[in-house]
Image (cartoon, rainbow, N blue to C red):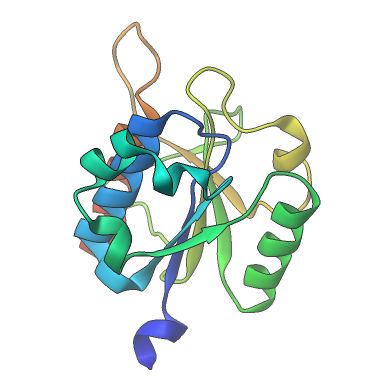
Length: 162
């Protein structure tokens, strides 16, 4: 189907916090439906009762994959790049593009998300597989957002464009 060819892949990486994983799955499915594939570091969380309560059955209609960090993740990203998807890291770096209303986002992409404190690992950002880093325009002294909230803001920008 045409939806399969335009599918947006949302790997949720380095995120082990159950509420964040549930929130990302629920938000991704709510905004993009079956167009989204969510890659979790492991699938054990699917059996967690807290995850099940927070995800509100979104895991039943979203496409979920298990992609552990390391070589399998690199292979996953290579495969999706070969299929024509751009790899975008939602990460604060010295060369990140600020995500604004007019910032163009590719229709076919993989979004990389890091952990709350440490972000994405340097080895991944320097792997040659990340096409672009984007960050949200934050004003306050906190300097960061919960990964689920940041992902939701990115997904909303994506939805407005596609």
